Length: 288
Image (cartoon, rainbow, N blue to C red; front, side, top):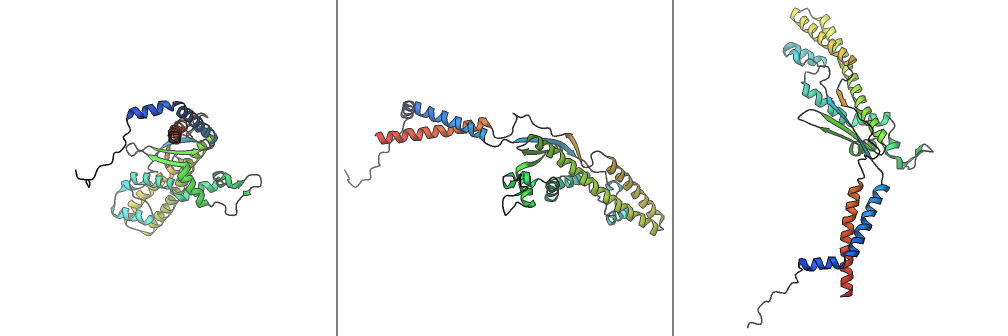
């Protein structure tokens, strides 16, 4: 026999029977760890700040039409000079949604409602009415927190239905902010459109006075008729950019979004199971 021949080391194998016997032998310890950790997880969920999510369901509109149906040619060029958008309905809807997501409008909303002390309540001294820190949060900090932590916008491309949700520790405020966010964005877009129509009408009126070409004057009058109709709709419509289908309402007190007590309890129980096995294995090593 060759003494130099390599001999494979014998590796210990753990059978399922041995694992089962180990678990049964330490069942009391493991179950105790599972119960204690599970109860601790549920208790932690009670201690954490509760959050509720309120949703408003809406559909972006096409504004008040515009002049996309009047074709190109000289009228198209005239409309472009006047600052009138000839984009299609889909483009207008996308522009409205981008405005809703924009940093600028979000900052305006935060500033208008003085939300910085609310968003950073741990840094705000309500009794003294001032910040506790020498480096108070800025409007940019508020916009980032609001956009990433509180507000969520989801769009169903197939139906065109959009949901805007606000998640906050005050369920009444969550619903209020969601409805206000949509309403104020709609009003801002309405005022912007009215200002554009006013400039366009002023330009077209001036062009009418400066041209004697019959065909061009007829085209300008047609454009002015369209602009007047759209300006009237923008001023009188209840919903200019966003048609609300289901406004946000405060969620029931028990219907919170987080923390989920069941998940916290299950997570704690799982950690307890692992801890119990580790403790039992350590005790076996010390006694062997």
